[in-house]
Length: 127
Image (cartoon, rainbow, N blue to C red; front, side):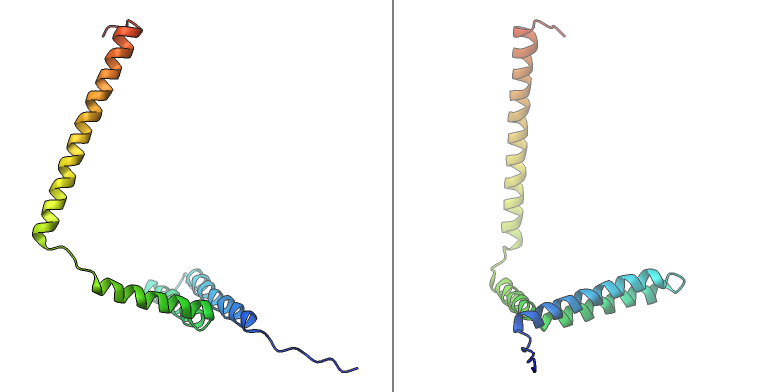
C-alpha cells in the first residue's frame, strides 16, 4: 500500500515562517552573548541582523503581510493628519496646565476640609 503525503497547508507554512523568524531573532540574541569577547559593535550588529532577518522571514507569512499592509496604511493615515500649529499647541498646553492647577487646588481644599471634619469635629484630635 502506497501512502500519499498530503501537501502542507498554507497555515502550516505560515506558522513555519513565523517560527523561522523567531529563530532568527533568538539566534541574534544568543550570538550577542556568545560573542561576549568580541567588540560591542559586532555584537550589536549581530542582533540587528537577527532582528532584520527575523522580520523579513516573518513578513513573508500571511500574518506578516497583513501587518506590513496595516503599517503602510497607518503611515499614510498619519500623513493625512492635520497637526496643530504652534499657537494652537501653546493654547492647549496652557489650558491643560491651568485645569491641572485648578483641580489640584480643589483637591487640596477637599482634603483639608475632610481632615478638619474627621480629626477636629468627629475625633476631637486638636493639632
